[in-house]
Image (tube, rainbow, N blue to C red; front, side, top):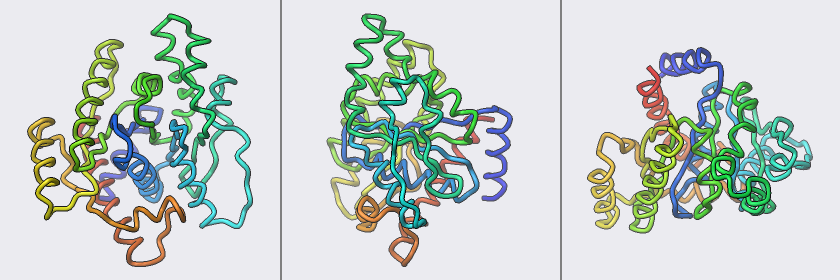
Length: 284
């Protein structure tokens, strides 16, 4: 795996800016934030310089990573500026907070729910301007990092239309339940419409099934339907099973203290290894 990591780092170095990866699904509660933060955590441990951009007003990624920072530092810190203020100032470069070596956070808060209103006031009826409001703000940040991981909320048209404009790849987070499968299909169709509308280079790097119970007939059926709908080659071979410890990370932050932590982190190493391989195949 070391050779693959080295190869991807060289690809990113040659590009001169970060690879931006969006975690998506139209439905909420399907593991988008867990996937965003744990893949980012693993990439940072591999030596990539990673920025997590929390575009969700619920700010769950911000909370998880802030708690992770607290687990690794006695420093008391205050978030003075969040995404919405950065958008209003038209400058995100002073927002990143260091969480641990190689991992920074672009924090969000409940005020980001006003993003749609901000677009309405500042873009008017200009749909292009509305959908491209965030893209120029992320360009300076891309030059400072290797990988940008973007966490998005469910059912938010304005953010769903803006995020693909500045991202290179999408991972579809697929909980093996019917609502999540429907949400994934809707999200893919919306993404393809946005890609066609603005001739975007964004690609779906893979569908990541999670919270899967391999003995459950419903889970099996959803996974089969996903393979039929999206193509088996587009489904991650690594599947995230139901692991209670994942539910603890939003309460305590990401930790690596016992066998239960390590079980989760080792599974996300498998996911991240596969992601690196998929990224290389797209980039070469």
